[in-house]
Length: 403
View 1 (cartoon, rainbow, N blue to C red):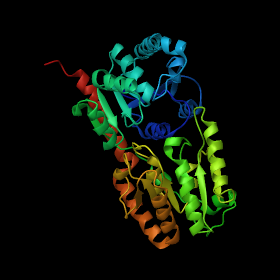
View 2 (cartoon, helix red, strand yellow):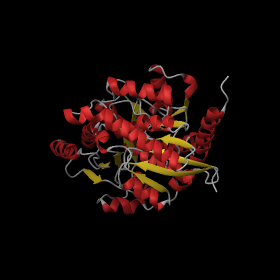
View 3 (cartoon, rainbow, N blue to C red):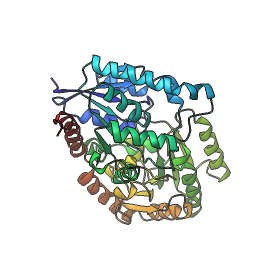
């Protein structure tokens, strides 16, 4: 029987990057230490995965209207905006009641909105709260109001903020959150599982790509700040240099952004990539598709807190080309495990892709160096131990008598 009951609060039920990281953590947590449960708004892919792991799932948190709030604005519906204070208060009260009723010992928030209402609810229920921060909270990504809400919840209601990278930690410190509350713990992956041999040729055959054809791909949610349009433009340039090359866009739009995918397909068509670029749509077997690539490309236009897909590629001994911002320099060693390029620079991105596809021996050496770096820093067992120690320290801190 676990020593502590842990409530994980997540406002999203689709499986994006933060949710994939969360599922890995839940799989790796010591069952003798923590018994996790999940609180989220509705049923969805995330709750399906939680139930498959035999976790308790508590639905209805938060109020549905709070889900309409965007990072950069409160939305255009005036009635909904006027109701947000009431919705927030109701959501916080209901979640606090759940925490007390089910006797949770600790609350871990794992998504942007949950970081705010989850820490408030934990304080109301008199339980320690830990934020697992996956975002770089700055003016490029968040409105002033949302930045203030983050700062307030982190500074006054959270016992600990576990950031996914030093870039994320530094952004919170710049907002005025005390360094004593901040700790960087990298996301980890199961290197043994990721390193299992796969039939990459079979994956390629699914898309009509031969075993010897050079292939580069971008993996992730298809949203504008992830830069898939810049990848498409870079791919078009590389295709002119390497007519035999092929390209994959692995992922789909989430949260009502399907029109953006249509825009990307039109862009690819206009650049002559209609038979060179494959849109795979959402895939649950991302690791297999990464193994089928020769080069993985990351093209985010905004600083990416810690793009774990780069680590996944390194675990498969694949070299990477990544936009040099956010947490990327904490993962990629330029010229050793791949190449970093300035964000939005399709010329440099294309040059790096073309170089790696044209020099397979050097690409393989970079891939091997990437695997060694992944083993050193991003092994799930190491990072989970760090997470467990940080969660326990938050509970110990709350128990300390006032001086």
